[in-house]
Length: 486
Image 1: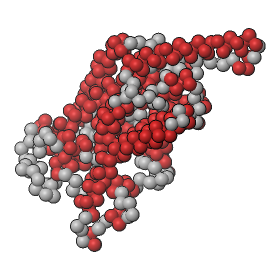
Image 2: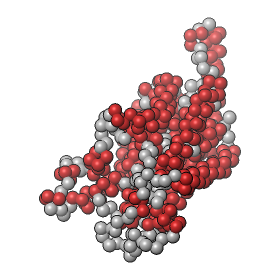
Image 3: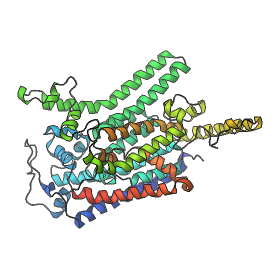
Image 4: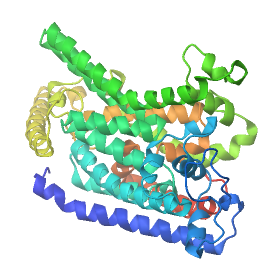
């Protein structure tokens, strides 16, 4: 059932091909729909001069090639803020809602607006291809099932929010950094993992939530050291190291907020100071989200927003059912946050206690553990049958510590998804949930899991693929022509 490292790698070329083909498909659809349809808003080409003369070129050049004009016409929605930040820096208060990693990357290429946009397209599509590869490797490490991991990765390559991964948005950078960071974390390469996860917080604000994986493992390792090994010193050391790693993941996002505070609040006249500058904890990002976009707890629960709730309902439903199914299937693990697990489950887990696991070690140790657990399970089952105690014969023929979506290792990902889905539904503009949750692995793991049981879930498998295809087509048509879409 489990394979060696060389056998695991034979799917990676297929993963890369799927990711590349999906990006070619998206770019083709974007070009096709831009030619086919007229944009709702034709102001994309407008580009006022920078407030400070930091460039040697005039933003509104009169002589532009048709290709340059077409590229600039693709600077729409949030893309305007990213390109503007790369070209002129952070000029306005609301622009600080768009974190600096993508503008920083593309600003190295050229001061010309069209080349900034082109470099952003190239960076994001390349980043997505690499993110798909990390998604597959992470899926292998957690699920220990190459077939389910491959199917989940292909679903990720054609996810419903695909249009944003091939546009001037930060989704691709966030995906490669968060997926790569978590992959290296479960592989034991903690320094590299913390670096990537910290950078994910400079791509998207929800990157700071990735510190939850560090906190989860720290909590379990400290508990194990204190209550099982009876080693208070080791437990304290684990807590200190975990707190330091978590702080490092938060640090870039906090530093950017401090940068915004310095630019917007320091050295201003009293009548120029913004209200958030006077707060005890001046959080620029929270103020911008609330003041400019009306983000807040239950503030989006209005009858006129019903279409947006319907637009987000597929992704939220998939998240809901994936969490509920895991909780119902593994209630002891889920409701105890993983503390109430057997020794066998701990031994094959890569998120609770492990500190230095490579991909080959994961596959080998899990294979041995699964054989031992299977034997223990069968012996216990035979004893119960001999005794006539059928009430203690498990109805499911799987061992308790099983690979796949229902393994103990999936728990922190399910908890992370639950927090993000709840935030998207209760606090954010709900239509953003489609792309907000699109880099969350449990969605695709669960979808791939139910597709392995075609007799029971065949209809749901078709529905998931139809949902992805419909949103790819709908997003390519609407978003690229400046119509509202998530």
